[in-house]
Length: 179
Image 1 (spheres, rainbow, N blue to C red):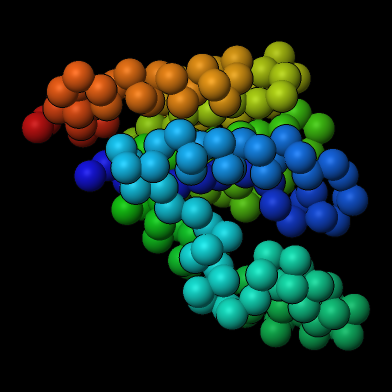
Image 2 (image 1 turned 180 degrees about the horizontal axis):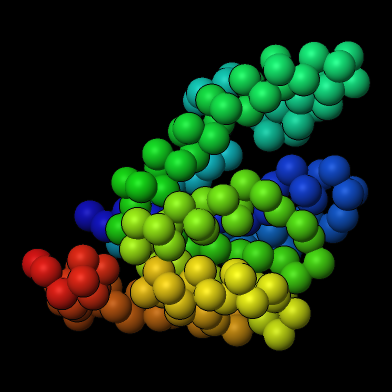
């Protein structure tokens, strides 16, 4: 079975106290629509398994460490999460990303750089593609991926590639023509 990793802003949404509906809707829709076709790796689950904390609890814990000026301890805590997340990116056949044009994210961009470096296709959507930084666009296309106007278009594209015995063509595309 093919494997994908979900990239989207998480801690940025919490820090800036912004509406999280778009981010959570994206994540849940991808998981629901692709269940049974593709193994969807969700970093929220991975991070909970690693730290024993929810995203909100981890965010608050890191904030407490920083407020107490325990910067090295905060960095070490985050390093474990980074290692798990980047390892999951490397194990993926492709990644699915939602980048919000008005949210500044570090982890998601790092994951996209990693995917692009290893030529793991990035299938990306956004609330406003025209407002995305050109570096994000470059990473997407350099990886062999595509950009989509909506999560529905992105999911349809992946389902289409996986349906009607097209799994082989998707695998071939993802592996640079090698089956």
